[in-house]
Amino acid sequence: MNLSTLIEVRNLCKTYENEGVFTQAVCGVSFSVGEGEFVSIMGPSGSGKSTLMQMLGFLDRLSDGEYLLEGENTKDFSDDELAEIRNKKVGFVFQTFNLLPRTTVFENVELPLLYDKELSNDNSKKVLEALRSVGMEHRKDYFSNQLSGGERQRVAIARALVNDPSVIFADEPTGNLDSKSGTQVMKILQDLNDAGKTIILVTHETFTAEHGKRIIRMKDGAIVSDEIIQTRRFATDGELLK
Image (tube, rainbow, N blue to C red; front, top):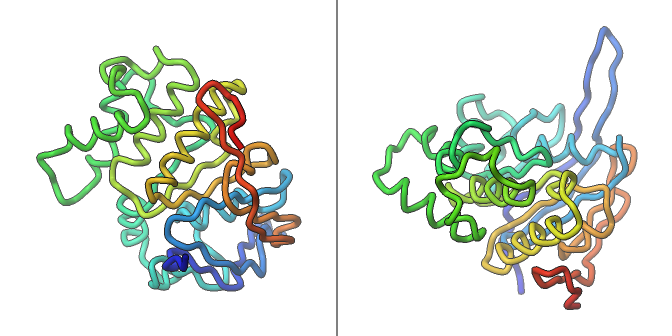
């Protein structure tokens, strides 16, 4: 099946400058991601994978090269334009969850909707649908600091979903979880991908990366391999299915 291209990067580079010293974190990176793909970006600490994700998620600007999202070159977009893309087209799931502690699950998931300039009357419906998709609707009135780590990450995934983004970026989403909770979170991401969501996962763990369908490996700021893989699939109890 030919997938429509969602993301295309050409010779992407990121250089940091500190007191006259220039450090190239990423350079010469080119690849594309089709709609509905599940891509794992893998590499050791310092390989450039997190820097790459920050650029792809519009959390940081590229230094050189081109980044096309849905066919639009984003390199010269204003800060306001990038902020709007971040809110409407991109969902984030982080290792540290990034939930507001003394705020309910419902309010945490609703937060991206409150930044939308186009006010909507169906926020409640969107929030409950997102919570239902990760099995957390029954916890909607709990405060986030009353939840387990696995439950917090489910809420973070619901928050990433609530605006129906074009792509979800997951940065080490199992890093703070035990193996069972980590497997449950990865199964949710696989189920979302099965439903058509594009997932880009950043990890240093082979086991986690193999939940995707394609692995891009990085080293020293460059891509060293890009291959389709045999995906690991698990039941919610952690049993390997294939």
